[in-house]
Amino acid sequence: MLYSQKRPADKRADFRAALASGELQRFPGAFNPLSARLIEQKGFDGVYISGAVLSADLGLPDIGLTTLTEVATRAKQIARMTDLPAIVDADTGFGEAMNVARTVQEMEDAGLAGLHIEDQVNPKRCGHLDGKQVVDENTALQRVRAAVDARRDPNFLIMARTDIRAVDGLAAAVDRAKKLVDAGADAIFPEAMASLDEFAAIRAAVDVPLLANMTEFGKSELFTVQQLADVGMNLVIWPVSLLRLAMGAASRGLDELENAGRLTGLLDQMQHRADLYDLIDYEGYGRFDDSVFTFTVER
Ligand SMILES: C[C@](O)(C(=O)O)[C@H](CC(=O)O)C(=O)O
Ligand SMILES: [Mg+2]
Image 1: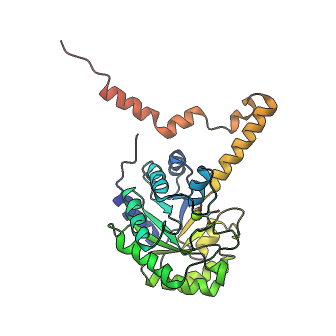
Image 2: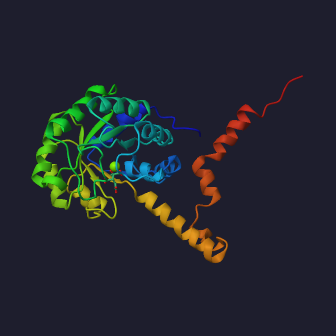
C-alpha cells in the first residue's frame, strides 16, 4: 500500500549483493510508476529508468532535452513504487563535472539504487543512432570521478557508460572501459555492442559488473538472458520495450475504436480491472480505512 516500505539504503545494499552473486540481474524498463509495480509483481530483479522513455513520455526526442529536475522527479515517482532497486539513465550528467556531482546527489535523494553517466558530447543522442561523438578521455574520467566523490551512500552504484565503440571501435571501448574503472566506476555499460564476442572482450578487460542493453530496433542483436549470462554479463536491460509494447497496443486499440466503434473485441487483451486493483493493492487501502476510519464512539 502507498509506497515501498524498503529504505533506499537497503535496496542499494541488496542490489550490490545481487550484483556480487554472479546471477544475471534482469531490469526491464518501467515507463511509469505502475509498470514498476508490475515488473516487481512479475518477479524481475530490478527496474531500469530509461532516458529515452522519459523523453518520449514528454513527446521529446532522446537528444538531451530533458532536465535534471524532470528526470529526478520522475525517477523518484517510479523508484518509490517498488521494493526493487531502480537505476536511472542520467545521460551525460546534465552538464559539466559539477553538474554530474549534483545529479548524483539528486538521484540519491530520489531513492535510486544507482545511475549511469555516459561519455557522449552534449547534446547527446540515442546510443543506437549514427553520428555520435564522445568526449575526450579526460572529460569522461572527470565525470566519473565527480560522480564517485559526490555520492553519500557508498552503495549507490556509479556506472560509467561508454559510447566509444560506435565512434572508434572495440579496442577503444576496451581501453576506455579500463580507464573508467580506474577512475572509480563501480560498473560499466558498453553501449551498442555488435556481438556476444564484443561483450566477452569487455568482460575479459575489466572485473566490475557489466550491463548489456537489449534495446529493440538498434545496433545490438537481441540475445537471450542465457546467452548474456554465458559471456559473463551481470545486468541486462530492456529499456524501452514496455513502452513500445504499450504504445503498440494503444495504437491497435485506437484502430479498433475507429473501425468497430467500441473495444469489446479487445477486452481479452486488456489488463482486467481486478488485476489493476490487485497491482495497486486496493485491498490494502480498504484495510487502512477499516483501521482508521471505521471506529465506534463510546457514549
Ligand atoms: C538505453 C538508452 O540510453 C535509454 O535511454 O533507454 C537508449 C535506449 C534506446 O534508445 O533504445 C540507448 O540505448 O541509447
Ligand atoms: Mg538513454
